[in-house]
Length: 472
Image (cartoon, rainbow, N blue to C red; front, top):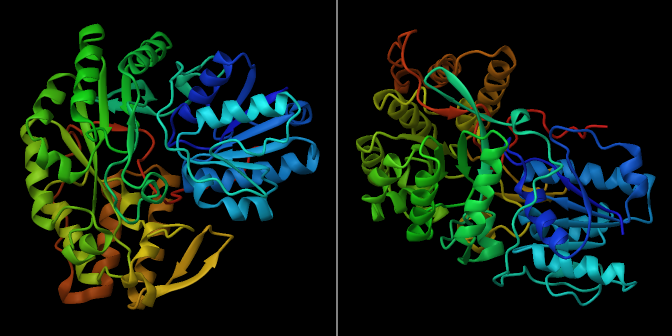
């Protein structure tokens, strides 16, 4: 069988959604061709030669690109079997079968079902009855069993210099994403992990993680992003990996994502991670409104955010908050408070402007649908947007979100400094709220030292720029 695997978008990183499946399939004796549609074109010969096409869709933006790819593949090669795999495959299975030519859908721990499916098809079977593989006639739940990991296979993937880089102390360095765990033991209602993993997580064996780190370092990586949904789900496991990585590569730096709740639960881990090369932490602050945080079941409060910020700063690391300022429960006053907090805490260089535009996404199967609190705001399911429509009870919030969105896109297009974009957003709010307006941001020195960041803004469940156009 000619196997074509497609990655659609992984936050600007060389895709793990190709590296891990290729590793499993190669170990099983199959050859694959991998294409990352976020940086490369899908050419006609690749489509025509494919017997099986696996499309990795770990997030909303990837899903939008993946559906366009599937439509084109079916049109040019209708005999090819198409399989979507990843978080958003599991959430959108029915739509993929009905409208985008899917033959199979796999959610959860996708690699073993994918290998079993390829084996079955290669032997002439229909592929029915594979555990974890959803078909047009049989619904299969996400595959949530521990897998016997094979080393990720990155050969044939685009070079690291085509992906996100670390910017730190005036230098730009190649970065690579690795994975130490999957799933999440937390159940935040808006997170796509919750309806798929439902509080479960699985660690990637230490030797597999370290082997992958060696592989990307040999290809030029000088910084590692731990792409786990939460690096501190298994804190001892993660700390062992960070220690081993530092012993072998003492100059290697890294960043990771973790909950505010976990920073507070294990405050002693943060200074050690900093000493091992940790530069910054991404944490889902989401909102400063306790009402919003309660309705999302985030597990932290407004006061917890300030305590976590202090812990990270004391460890001489940077906290880069991810935000969700537009939900049905958010108010204009909440947005003003958020801007005021960014100014007071000197976070203008730590907040990617896109974070101030993000609107709650409610995909099919979202755990938010489990709560009655969302029902008064919920509209119809939009298959075009792969999400339920909703309108804010205060129309000014929808107007503000649209205005902030355009300001951010203009800022990205012109390459302006993030702090300038933030100030424009603050001015837009000023014009809407009058006396409630947040004070101007503190003046920033032009020769200031910028905190570490990646060249690709971190974001989740949103589309900050036009990445959904399939390269042809």
